[in-house]
Amino acid sequence: MRAERLTDAIAHHAEGPCWWPGWGGLRWVDMLAGDVLALDASGRIDRVPVGDVAAMVRPRAAGGAVIAVERGVALADEDWRVDPLRPMWTTDAVRMNEGGVAPDGSLYVGSMAYDQTTGAAHLYRVRPDGAVETALDSVTVSNGIDFSPDGTRAYYNDTPTGRITVFDWSAEDGLARGRAFADVDGFPDGLTVDAEGGVWTAIFGGSRVERWSPDGTRDAVVEVGARQVTACTFGGADLADLYITTSREGLTEGEDPAAGALFLARPGVPGKAVTPFAG
Image (cartoon, rainbow, N blue to C red; front, side):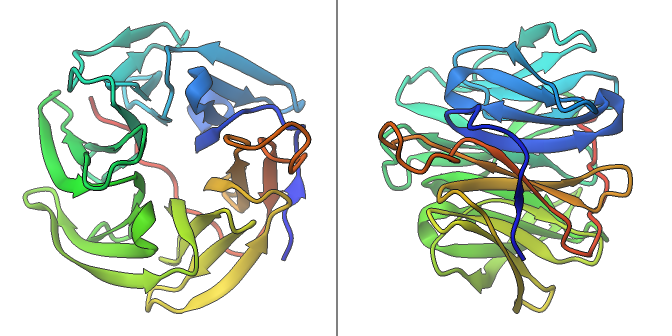
């Protein structure tokens, strides 16, 4: 299966896509530009600047969005006016990266060092009341996280490991009993889980998105016309569209001309609705 290219190479480092009906459709980020991008029904793309870094965006149950910014998270109202919360750290060597929302409405969001120092990052759990806990420490490039349809398992990528890790999950205990789910040929980046429990992960540098069945078997591949594939999410009225983001970070002018474009595939299995952040 091959993905269709939807846009020009409009982003430097596109990431964190999310479909939410309350927004009217798809939002994703141009991470190091600090912008949230929006695609409307006519195909027009709007940009909203939110800071120096916009690492991911998810809906809030109260309306608007929660956005990972350089050193923490920010809340946006329905007019996309942004209120940054207190920074989670002071060093300028580390920034936020990808994340997702757990079945209880908690936000799981992770960091990475700008120079990708091994073990310098964390995965955090931001509870609806604003309390912040460290869910995992000593990670390197904290990336995609999503949850099984029944809410009992979490799938997570620390990109340099080349592995998708699965955890047991509960609202009371959070992540527990981490173990290998799948070893990937390449660098697993953002991920999403479909309605059947399949795990779709972008392969950075690999020009593809892979699906891994709930038993850990790779059973589908979507080829993408850009090498640096960063993340994916399901959307559309029937949640049957797989939107895929790409990056041109680190590339020279004219190298990989489609890098930074948004792609679309219809893989034949629907996604599950995103859970909004309850804070």
